[in-house]
Figure 1 (cartoon, helix red, strand yellow):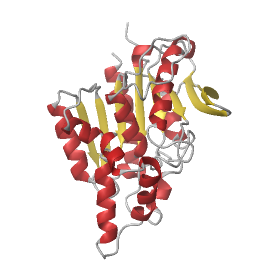
Figure 2 (spheres, helix red, strand yellow):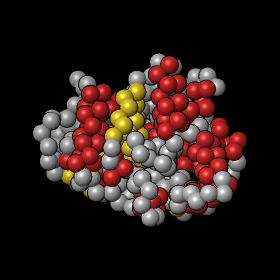
Figure 3 (cartoon, helix red, strand yellow):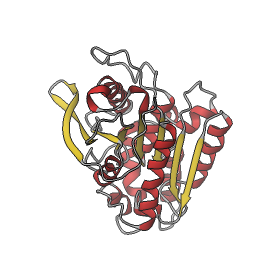
Length: 304
């Protein structure tokens, strides 16, 4: 029997923080948004953005609450960022978090085969990378006690992801070196790329676009890819290349290009554009409302 929640809205939501992983004296927390009901509900592991270095599990609370009110359990993860760990440290934590959620599925009112990932910007990149490589021995290096679950997911939702970290890095460097005025995001993201990835070789290795170009044997979960047509922070050619390669490899990918989706995900080009992208987002605009509704529809469609 599929874990499809009823379509009525406005579940009461219980919110709590739990420790899902510990590194020495540092606890990593998951903020759980739990619909009150019998379930089983689909579950989403939510990964915050912040150019792999900023942000935390509280960043997308407004979206996560909306999902939970619609009968979707959400686990918003904190994970290691620099200086605590560079790549692949965050991937290790997230892979563990997915497997931890599967172990706890019955207690939380979900099922292990109904787990999705969702992320915005760098969180979208991590959601896709982990979705494609759930069994990578580097990422699943830490065993989950009393569990044999893997980190495969039912689907991936990406909002304006950094789908090609190396391509975005070189794009930003080219803008900076052009001698012309350039958008503010360039001076923010370049040092954060360096801090997280350490080298262009790592940006190429942990790269969903280039993994497909290399012909890697990867998992191909269904994908919902959402981006604003006017987004200047996440280059459109990289989106188009990923979509082409993913579909060619046999993956199902729904692409949502919308005017104004940035209101829910990443601002286009206001002052302090990228910095604002790391703050809480209020999905109140008509386009943002449609974006979240599309996410809910995608989850329910594939939870059948």
